[in-house]
Amino acid sequence: MKRHLSFILRAVVATSLALGTAACGKPFDVKTAPGMVALENQRDFDWRATTPEGVVVGVRVVEDEKRGDIPFWTQAVTLQLRDVSGYALLESAEVASADGTKGRLLKFGHDEDGKPYVYWVSIYLAQDRLFLVEAGGPKDLFERARPNIEWTMKSIHVRCNGFLAPVLSSHTCNRW
Amino acid sequence: MTSPSHGLEKHLVLLFALVALLLAGCGGAAEKRHSMAPNDSRMMAQSSATGRVDRESDEMADAPAPPAEAAPAPGRNELGAPPPPPPAPPKQEKKGEPNKEQPKAADGGDQAPHETAMLIYTARVTMAVYQVEQGLVAVEKIAKENGGYLAMKHDREIVIRIPRNRFEPALAQIDKIGDVLHRDIQAQDVTDEFVDTEIRIKNARAMQTRLKVLLEKANVKEALEIEKEMRRVTEEIELLEGKLKLLKDKIAFSTITVAFEARGSTIQATRIKLPFPWLSQLGLPTLLRLSEDR
Image (cartoon, chains in turn orange, purple):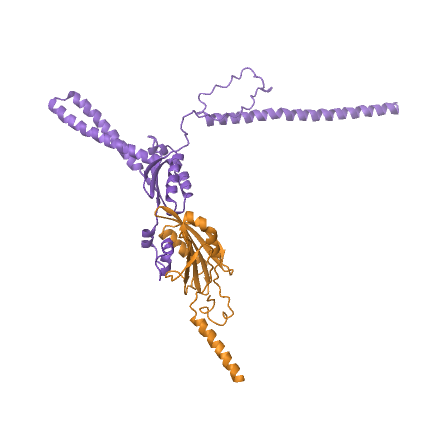
C-alpha cells in the first residue's frame, strides 16, 4: 500500500513537471473583446486580434528584459517612436493590468499616407519579462473601436499567480 | 482787610486768567503749526516743480508758460506760494505714430543700424508627423494673425514670414499645434554688412555726382568714357540698393520654417543605438501588417 502511494505521488509530480515544462502556452492571459477576432500563427507577436476594419491589438513578450525598469523602457520606446519614427506623443499615463500590475501607457499619433493614425503601447514588467500591449489603426476607425480596444488592453494578466510559482521558475508558471 | 469772598473772587480771576493764557498758548501753537504747513507745501511744490521742469524741459517745450507771479491767483495762500501743480497728463501719441519705445531695428529703419545690432531671426521647428494637413493650416493661420504671410508651402513643410516683434509669440503659438521634436533658432548679426552697404551706396552716389560735373565740362571723347563709368556706377548703386532692401526685409520679417518629419537620419548619426532589436519593430507598420503569418 505504501509503495503504491509513493508511486502515485511520484507519478503526479512527474506529470505536473512534464506538463509545466512542455506547456506551449503564453506567459500571459488576454481576452478578445466582442467584435474582434484573435489571429493565429503570429510571427512578430505573441498574440494579436483585429476588428473587421483592421484596427489591431497585439501583445509582444520580450524575454529576459529584467535589466530595465518601467521608466527606462518608457523612455527607450518614446525615443524610438518619437525621435526616430516621427510619431507624436499625445499622452503618457499610468495604467494597471487586470491583475493589478502597474505599467505605462503611451499614446502616439502618426500620419500614414497622409491619413492620421493612432498607436498606443502599454508597457508592463513581470516574470522578468517585458510585456508590450500595442493597439493601432486609422484614427476614425480606432475611435469607433476604442471601447473594445481599451477593454482588451486592460484584460491582460501578466503576473504569475499560480500555486506552482514559488516552487517553479517563472518560465513555467502562469502559462495559460 | 479783605473779606473771604473777595479773596475767593481774586483766586477765581487768577484761575481764569491762567486758563485763558493756556488756551491762548495752545491756539497760538496750533496756528503756528497751521501756518507752517503751507510753507512746507510751498517748498515741496517748488522743488517738485523744479524737478519737473528739469525732467520735462524738452518734452514740455511747447507747453503754455506758467502765469506771472505779480497778482496772487485764486487758490494761492497768503504767502503767495502757488498750490502744487497737478501732475502732468501723460503725453498722448498721435495716431499712426510708431511707438518710440520699440526698437527701430525691428522695422529696418535707416537710423537704427548705427545704434543697435541689426539681427535676422530665423527658426526651424521640426514636428512629429501627425495630422500634417491640419498643422499646415494652423501655421498659416498663425502667420496671418501675427501680421505675417505665407512664403512657401509643401506637403510636409511650410515657411512663414513674421514681423520681428511677433517672432516669439508666433513661435509659442506654433509650439501648441503639435508635438515639437526639435527647435532651432538663429540670430544672424548683419550690422557690419548693413553699414558697409550703406557706406558703399553713399560713396557711389558721390562718385555719380562728380561724374555728372565732369561730364558737363568734358569733350566728346571724354564724355564717352565718363558715360561708360556712370553706367557702371549706376548699376553698382542699383545692386547695392537691392541688397540693402533685402537686408531690411530680412531684419523686419523673421522667417519660421515648420517641418513635419522624423529626425531619424540625424538621430541615427548622433545617438548610440540601443542593443534591443525589438525596439525598431515597434510602430504601426508591423502591428497592422496582418497578411504575414508564421
